Amino acid sequence: MFAAASLALAVSSTAFAKSYKGAEVYSAQSQLHGRIEMRMRMARGSGILSTFFTYKNGSEMSGAFWEEIDIEVFGKDNARSWQSNIITGMGTRETSEEVHTADVSLADGYHTYALEWTPDYVTWSVDGREIRRSTGNQVASLRNPQSLRFNMWSSESAEWVGPFDDSVLPQHQFINWIKYYSYSNGNFELAWQDDFDSFDTARWSKGDWTFDTNRVDFDPQNVTVKDGTLVLSLTREGQTGFNGDVPRDEDTGPGTGGAGATTASSGGTGGAEAASASSGGTGGSGAATASSGGTGGVGAASGSSGGGAPGEGGGSGGATPDEGSSDEGCGCVAAGASPTTSSWAAALVVGLSALAMRRRRSRG
Image 1: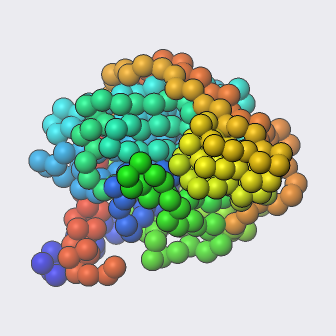
Image 2: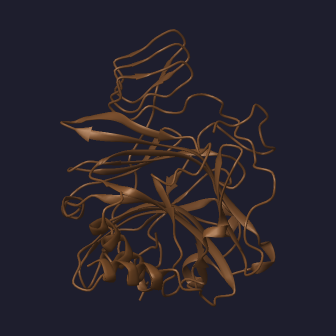
């Protein structure tokens, strides 16, 4: 078993030969259900995707049942559209893509994205507004813990993401923070938060693989932490890394409270069914109280389930807003379906999974 783990890990780090390099970050621990919130500014450019997704490790292995939940922002059309998706199944995989359009470019400012996953439903929200809610058999088939992942890549499917234009490179995805809320008996409770003041190697690892239809190799050098921000880059070969200035996030508050969270402190946002929102906060839909200047949250589900090809799985800011950025909410609406730590045992699982990543998530 030790030899197999070592071999798998060694093969997974073999150099690749693609002309473009992307980035993927994945969590060491997997989670069953919960609410995940992240504050992100996405990339712009036709053919480019910047994402967050959850993924059952080993789904790509022969004979395994696939489990994945996606947020994928398209860089085409000024980065104003994004796709929500669930992928499940063995052999022929079932997908349920929906494409949503924002009122503003998701590359011009930071927005708070959230996935809420329970045994009964999955929801996607942006800036406190619920955009989509999925229930039924596909949600019920999400039965196993999933890792948390960000990635930035380029699909070869022009009909899906637009023709690739490498003149816009380099491009970057900026993640200010991520929060994970555990789920138990109908309630969410904050379990941990990462403000990316450093790259926590106990929590995260960097991908070094690729897969079919992916124009890029994932290169660990395209994962950078700078100024309290996780930066994923898409570059040409030989030009990896990020040396620029991190765009500042105009939101200097403590972020959002999860649905069912007990409180949202001053300046924060309580999720749906939050018990209270204190001074200056925003109570979520169904909040019991919103005290001293707080307001009730909003959210509406939209869109219907659709078929198509499977999608692919990804510090506090300063006080000065970016020009053209917005924290007023993304105004997303449904726009129709897309066209298409340490133990040796753990090392074996991670190693074998990393080896198989070279062929995972093909759109074929």
